[in-house]
Length: 108
Picture 1 (cartoon, rainbow, N blue to C red):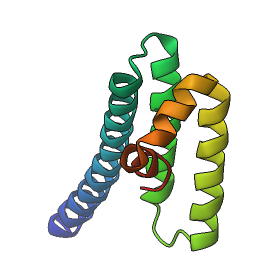
Picture 2: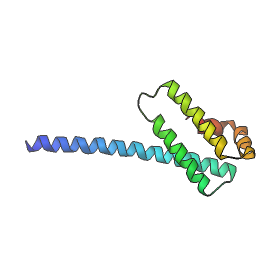
Picture 3: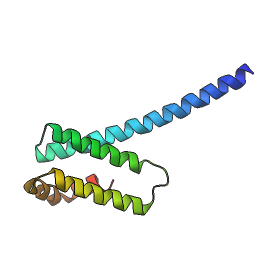
Picture 4: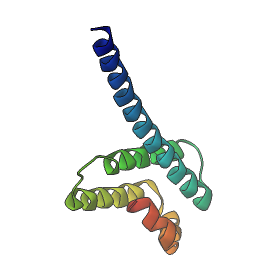
């Protein structure tokens, strides 16, 4: 009986740890995206925190198992709209000029 309980607790701990690592990786990826954008556009302050939250949400959604291509497309459009609303015209133009960074931010 003790072994069964110990096994159950062990399995619960492993599943909890796996979920925590997945969430952490989404946070790390979001932070990396926000840092890359902030460095490229030379921006700082609360706007960077807003962008970081946006990219964390993006990565959490993309890490969800079984996400459909339709959902990915909607997510891409939402990110494009939020970037357009957050950045001024010159910043957005500069970002779109760097296609590698722009695609990384909206697709991955």
